[in-house]
Image (cartoon, rainbow, N blue to C red; front, side):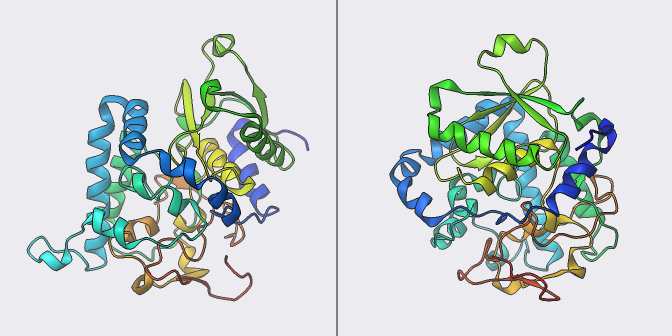
Length: 326
């Protein structure tokens, strides 16, 4: 594949996703069972501590903004009222009700969902402020105009070679192999190349990804600068999940956050667990850019059909029955 200029790199990724129909947020149930004891050994407090240490002093402010994003979304759906106790969100109650294991990272990340956007995205303060602003300014959930990738050029990677490291204290050969397999998959479809560094000191002032075995599966959107963590925790090692989190870091949002998604899928909000509606908010053209690419039901960046379901049944439906969502 012939490489192209940096300002078109995200377009190339989007195009590649139409060639790749990996199950979007899915890992095998066998993997989850194999790693269950390890997964449970990482407590909720330890996971939050990890996020707090990574984000730094802005952590509390971002967390507050995430709460405001959820409330703003509920108000748009008429599901929240400060004066009505039955229309307030109880995050712990939501977690307690979401007990079924749907085989996706929605289950794996349940204990840290309060601190992540759309279940697996660690937002920056600016990103959280932008999303809250666009929700409040756009009560109409059915606006036209599609996009998927970040539009802020400051978040673009400077070239097609992406340096990365492993947190050596938390890795093993099988875990490393799962990440390198995802890299090879992305490389086979795009001009991106991933270069491994054993020693972080060799990187100098380069921006780079650092994979570590944290509490859950999560990433940030676009180039943040310096060392950029990607958590591939226990149960997150499938090709689809590792590629999904890596593509977040390269600049992609979730496919179903496009403004034109209602032309292609129907979200049954009656079957969505109350309090999780904000996971289905759509970004604005000020935040992301779809670059005129068609909606991809089979994208590895698309939610599974049972994500955040209140009864373990499908609530995301393909309007034209072109593809069976998992």
